[in-house]
Length: 118
Image (cartoon, rainbow, N blue to C red):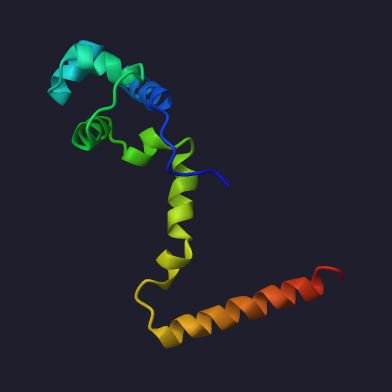
């Protein structure tokens, strides 16, 4: 399974550059909008420097993106991973409801195993 927390600054920079180009901005114009120097923007785009979380958030917002879009190879996979995690599914459930859900899942798994060889 992919480690969702590895950060490759070169990939992040490439995604930022692609978003900037898609929006028809030069590095200087994008840096101006992000209120950072064009030199620093260039270092972030090439993966030679790490920006602050606030700067990444500002850049993502400029392009209508999320941090997931910059930091993960497949942001949609990441969103699905979060949405279908056990913790996300069980949010707001009582202990009794969690037990019922657990028993139901185990019963489904057993039914799949029984019918797998039919």
